Length: 140
Length: 140
Image (cartoon, rainbow over all chains, first blue to last red; front, side):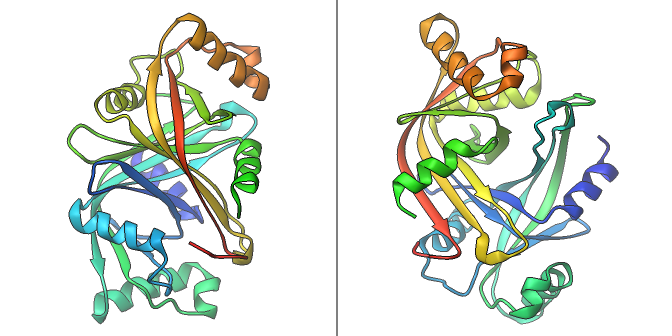
């Protein structure tokens, strides 16, 4: 799978998984809705800032900004399996024009966000590496 | 979601995502087919041991055995969203009775493995924590 094809598949996906590293070195993983724009991937935590899963994610990124994002496709026909992993560096964006820009990207993709604009912190990932694999042409 | 319900949902899932920590502290994430047995979750890398994704996963576990596994459900109706995260400690099992036991668990779950028994290293995770979230009853 070349990068153009990988980008197309990621952009078309509704959900990805965001892996971060905890302060003690253990990994942490959550599903995220996201939007892709050039080499930037954005997601937003919901307004319930006290939810521990949100707090963990944000604390992890502040201490270790390297993150990994996975989009994958499962099918009982294993010749149809594929995944794309995006590695990058994350930052937390709260308020201001950059926050608004990220929310606009998410609203453009998800009608659910248009129905109720989120207000929480944005996790913005600057992508540095694309890795794609598919069963039909396993190269990695 | 209580632990019994979380266990049921995980056991019924065909795919999970395995997050590990790289030697340099960055996170790594891959999709895995898996089998759950009591407090143990097993997966197997395919026979193509030189595939870099396999090598990375195994090297990570050897250096930092703490891993995190995610099973999630996406639906355009966001009131139906849920996820279960399993944290634990992984070890690599190659050969011997424990390797056979893990493969038998995977074959019992997946006809695809029965059609072609895998031969690669098993990643066996001893689970220490279950965290479940669902949109219909967000408690975390």
